[in-house]
Length: 116
Image 1: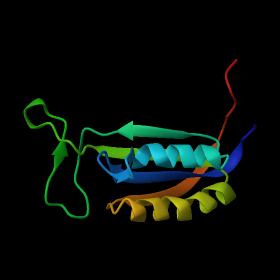
Image 2: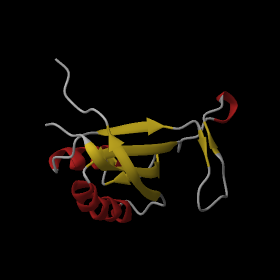
Image 3: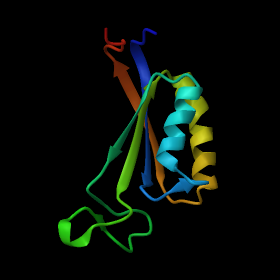
């Protein structure tokens, strides 16, 4: 698959403990993106965060290990594919009954190709 030019970057901010059934939400999101033929997905684990509830700061400091560190799922693809995935992501977040944030921005894709 060759992917270059204008696209979209989708970011989904969730918590590490958010689950759909017994599976982590971030894992379900990545597998759904693959199933839908998106170019790729990356899961990033944060070290500290707070969100809409703002009651607790989640941190990875040694003395206060949080069990709910921030997770960001990033996906870059064409506008059409990202737009199709956003609704699914929202439904999965609703099913997980979790808070979170979904953002998107324009991305100029310079190079995307598989390794040898």
